[in-house]
Image (cartoon, rainbow, N blue to C red; front, side, top):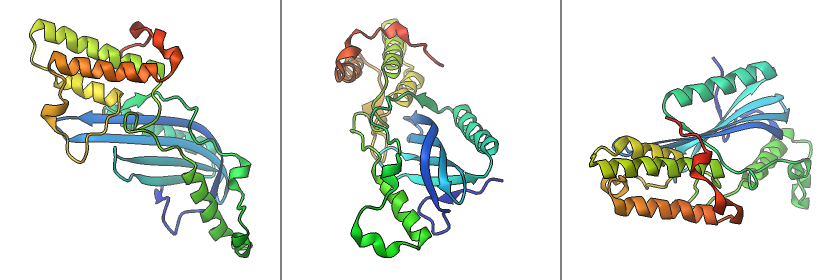
Length: 240
């Protein structure tokens, strides 16, 4: 079994990221189940005690996440673990969130350097220097807005949200009163901050007023970047 080590643990190996080779952002929401969970997984190549790390960050949207690492000497073993975790989460109902990576932290050699003279005394203490450098790496990650808590949603992701709302509209016109599954799917595809407890009656999308509200939300995300205005809702495949 692969050992999982907290990023903040004293037993965390020295590891400085040189490349993020692969990244997946996942999300799962259930209104009645009071679930609003995300899971980020990254394949890291780096320098230090090990050449490869699978980094995971997960928790409830809006709360402090858990950050963990799995370390490998073999690229193949690391890749197998990455794929295993990803397929396991997808099997549990997590949706793959496509985000634009423009603002995502991409490490460079200069970000690893300790530049302040006050740290000169740490030279020779490889473990302490490594901890400080990795902390600097963590702090370069972007803090996203409450409207996009897992990062700037891609055009395709927003289009998928519109498609779910179109299906909800069909149900409203048909007189259906079963909106739980589609609402859960919408919030899994369009990550939303619910707070510590989901207010089911507030967030269930079960009338035209709420439908318009969510469409306006997506239109606002569309217009946040000019080229998104012409996005076709039919451009993205709807996943079940």
